[in-house]
Figure 1 (cartoon, rainbow, N blue to C red):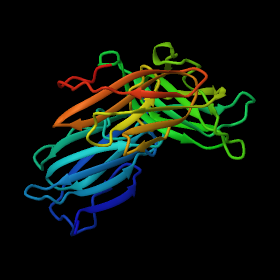
Figure 2: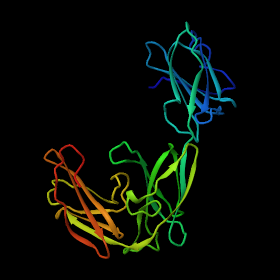
Figure 3: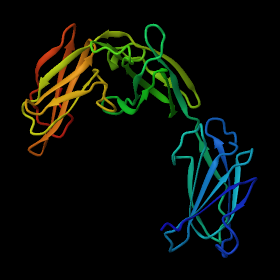
Figure 4: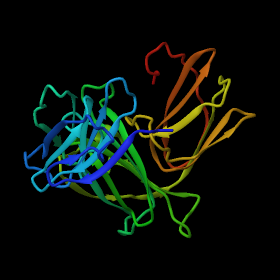
Amino acid sequence: MNRARLWIAVCGMACSLGPAGVMASASNSITGRVINAQTGEGIERARVMVQVTPPGSNQPATLVVLTNPEGAFGVRNLPDGACRIWSGKAGYLGGQRSGSQASILLSDADTPPAVILQLTRQAVIEGRVVDQSGAGVTASIKLFRLIPDRKGGVEFQRDMQVDGTGEFRLAGLEAGRYYLEFGGRFNWPNQAKNRAYSIQFYPNAADLHSAKVIQVQAGQVEQLMLQLQAAPAYEVRGRVPASTQRPAISLHLPGEPDAGMQYFNASWDERNEGFTFSGVPPGVWILEANFFSDGKTVQLFKTIIVDDNDVGGIALEPAIDSGAPGNR
C-alpha cells in the first residue's frame, strides 16, 4: 500500500504541508515564483508540486499548491529532508523540464533561497486535411522534427488519426523546425478499391528533401491547410525468400524514418513468404523489411516505382547488418 501523503491547496501566498500532528517537528518554509520563460512575467494559477522525503524514509509527502496572480507561492511547516519542486500549467510544456523544477535540502539550520521556476509556452500546429473540393478527409498525420546534428537529420515525434472532419491539432510542441507528412483514405460510401489519396510532405512534396520546413516559436499556433489529391490505387507484391520468421514490412516515402503508423496494410502469405500492399498511389516508395536470422539483424530495402499498374515479382535479397543501420 502506498502511504505517501498528498494535500492539495490553493494558496494566496503560503500553505502548510499538513494538519497539526502529522509532522510536529516540521518548521521549514519555501517561497518562490513561477514565471514565463520568455517574458519573465508571473504565471497565475500554475500548479506547483512540493515533495519532501525525510531522512531515513522512502515515503515522501507531497503538497500541490497554485500560484497567486503574481505567480508567487509559499509552503511552510515542512520537515527536514530532500525536497523536489516542479511546476506546470495547461498551455505550457509539461514534464519535469530543466528550469521548471528544483531540488533543495531542507534543514532547520538554513533558510532556502526563493525558488524561481520557469515555464515555456507550448507551440501548436493545427488545421484541416481536405480533398480537392475542400471537404474534410479521414487522414493520418506524422510529425518529424528537424535535428541537424542527428544522424538522418530528422526525428519522429508523433502520429495521429484524423476523423472525417479533417481537423487536427498537434499541441505540446517545443519551439523548433518540423516536417509534416499526411495521407488520407476514402470514406464509405465513396470508398473504392482502385482509388487512393496521395501521401505527401507539407505542402505537396513527394519526399522529405523537397518538403517545406514548418518553424514554430514558443506560444505560436501555426494554422495549416493540407490538401490531398485523389489518385489511382495499385498493389505492390513480392517475397522475402531468406526470412526464417515473418518480417516487419513497411512501405514509406523516400527520406522518411520508418516510424509511427503505417499507411498501408500488408497481407502476408506464410506458405509463399509473400507480401501484398494494397491501395498504393503512384509514386516512388521505399520498401523495407526487418527481421532476425541466426542471431543477426537483417534489414532489406528496395526502391519501388508505382506508375499506372500493379507492381509484382519483387524479391528482397538479404544484407546482414554489421552493427550500423541497414544498407539501402
